[in-house]
Image 1 (cartoon, rainbow, N blue to C red):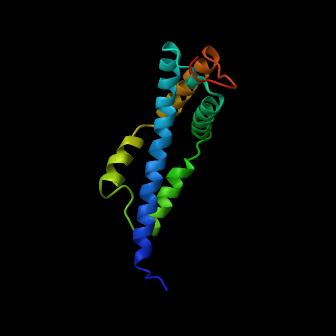
Image 2 (image 1 turned 180 degrees about the horizontal axis):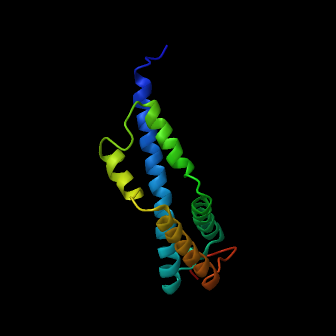
Length: 141
């Protein structure tokens, strides 16, 4: 039988992994738009690949939808639950717990985030319209 004292450490590591996944998704959303705009200006055809663009649009649509509906991100909910199972105080600990979390969470009224997410989503939609995704081969000619 496994040592029950190991479970809190395991939950803590899983919570850290959720933070890394969350930050990766944030980076995909933010830098994805940068890549679409810069890539089109530099004529990188791959930035208009259908899967990349659809995934990017879906990611920001989920963020905007959660914001409008007042839904807490499921990754945040999962991380908080894992931290509780690990008997950890919320948002305390080492580099991963503090450094990456500070990159994700800010103190501001909810309407600020809703507005920011909506404007960013509008920018993604504008890029979708300006440089539509392409099906099929998207490598450079």
